[in-house]
Length: 132
Image (cartoon, rainbow, N blue to C red):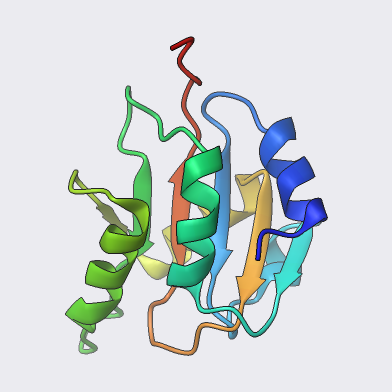
């Protein structure tokens, strides 16, 4: 489920680099030149495949999600599924839509999944791999 291209990208990333795991509707090519396709995969399935290979940042909030547009609402099942896939119970930073797009511009890469749930976009910030 984790493609060779995605494995290479994860290995190239350094401490503090961010990767966007986006839903199927995210304008990835508009915001980033390094786009990886993971069509057909739900975002939570891809997150579950990535997390054994990816150390989350311990010095900053390592999980960021898009906040709902005013007047809209989030499906709490999306965050719950992502938490479960990541085995993560820490803070999740909620970022306004256009601020999320700005972060996507600076991200190391964007991975487009087949996720169709609203606000199915998430950013992971890479930490330092422990020596243990």
